[in-house]
Structures are given as C-alpha cells and as structure tokens.
Length: 162
Image (cartoon, rainbow, N blue to C red; front, side, top):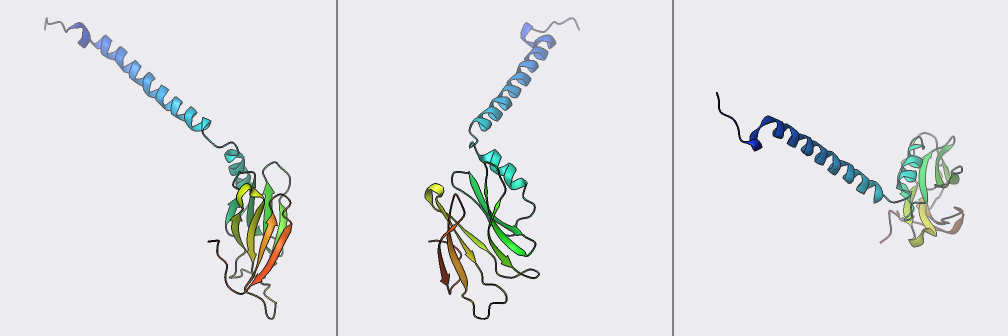
C-alpha cells in the first residue's frame, strides 16, 4: 500500500497524455477535411447544386468536361425534353422535345461532349405517330447556344461513340 509509482506512470501524467492524443486526432481530421476542400474542382459544388435543383431526370445526365454546363432530359408537359443548362445562371434551354403519350420505350440519348466543350451529341427517336420513321436522328449541337449544327437520320441504334 505504501508503494509509490514512478513519475511516468502516475495518473496525472497519463491523463495529460490522453489530451494530446485527442488534440492530435482532431488536428488530423481537420487537416484532411481542408485538404479535400482545397482539391475539389472549382465548379463541382455548383454543378451538384444545379443538378439538385432539377426535379426528376428521365435518362442520362451529361456534364461538360469543364463543368460549366450540363445536358439532361426530363419530363415536359407534352412528353420528354432535352435541356442545356449553363451553371452561370439563367433558365435551362429546351433543345429537343419528344412528344409522347405515357412512357415511350425509346429514349432520348445524350452521347457526350466533344473536347473543349464546343459540341455535344444526342440522339432523338422518331415520333410515335410517324408512319415510316428512321431508327433515330443524330444531332450535333453547339455547346454554348445549344443550336443544332449538324443532323443526320440513322437506321441503326446509336448508343455511343467508339
């Protein structure tokens, strides 16, 4: 009972060491969080906020390579539409609208953006009431205005670029 512990094993020193461990763990967590924020692409949070403001997506979402715009499709009053939305603000621009009653089996397809975000490609299936339609239309659109710069009818399904 009368034994005394060496100075390094006393409770006060052990209690004090625990505070340094807590401080070191908190510092590592804080530095990791700061590292993650510092290395997040500049437009990523704006893109996520913009995508979150869109009600319901109908098919694929294609953000531009630079993260400044997004092409997506969603329901419209008359069917399904493809929209171009620039993250700088403003309203989304309706590029193409497929009129359909109920849910059609053919989808509007976003194929992707060209390098430097100058153009993007999409496919549009024929209208339901078209008597002899092609399989789809392939469109190349301007990445800034959304205007169609090239159009071609194709008689085979287009699902992507090789």
